[in-house]
Amino acid sequence: MGYGYNVLVAPAVLLANPGISREEFVELLGKTHSSYFYEYRYKDAWDYYSSKTEDRLYHRGLEGLARILGLRYSKRFIEFQKPRVDENGLMLKAPELIPFGERHHYNFIVWMHEKNSFDEPLDKKLVSRKKLKEGDVWYDRFDGYDGGVVLGIIEEKGQGWESRKNPGSFSRYSYNLTIRPFRHKTRDECFKSEKDLYDKWPQFHTGFKHDWMQEKGYLTTIGMMGGDNFSWIQRNGKYYLSDETFERMPASLGCSGLLLGYVDLVMTSEAIRLKAWKVLSYKGLKHFSSFIKRFPEAALAYEKAVWDSHLSLYAKEQAMSASELLRLRITGE
Image (cartoon, rainbow, N blue to C red; front, side):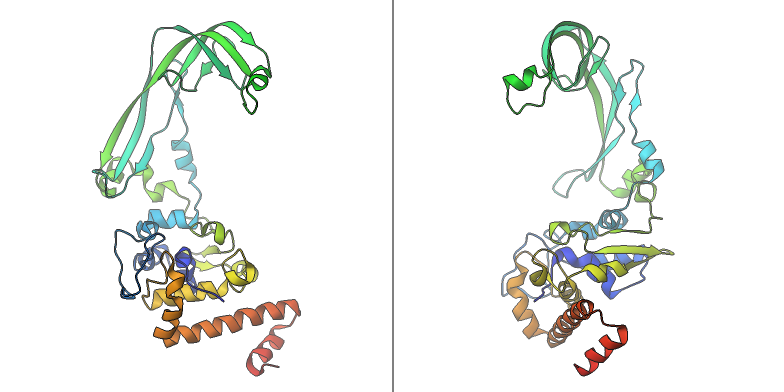
């Protein structure tokens, strides 16, 4: 068994194009047209697609690729994301990028925490997971506030009180206290294009944000079905599927019960090569038998992938040498 899957688009591109640069990777992903939620009709053309329904992560340029590769944040971006402290000792959160889809007027919004504004002190009953004292900052929301500074404790009920009162609660202390509440003063900056965004905020550009020197990782679009079965390596700016990927992958999803495997990967690559986007869609498996009949070269690739994958697994079980495997593959004995 084995089929094509939209979640295998990225590793399938690497399988067919080992040693590509990140720019080439982005270009090849941009030429794919898969969809995790659009269900093709039987009468739809094999190469039909709609940009409104396709998997958008494959079309997000270098930013999308960084997410697919699961790249770490760079040290300078981590430093940029550290909260600051205002003149009152309260936390100021770092600017945050909020991407939006095409249905919104603006495609990108940068949220900024500019200051904290105090209101008049008040008495309030609150519960806390930690013991509080005068001068502590309460950062949980209450009554429309974003937090407050504890000015005095009127009453404290001890550890475990809240858990006894409300089974399943994680709160440990109950307080009646005097608190000076504050609200975050925030501001949004809106951008219609990535160029406008990066001109103003180069810190959110993937060249600043991600560690492109990272030498290995896992393809993160696989999700639960693939887990960490498909990993990549980078050598001198060129990307490959790792040897470990081929060592640990099963023959197919049907053989492993959980993880996508070699036959699935090959058939995804074939669907991409033949622009058979119906296979790489929601409920795409219902089109697979027609795909094999419509494209004889795909049927041959399918048979070869099944033979190679099961033969390889058998050779591993038998601890066969490379020469023994080659002899078996050629002669069948």
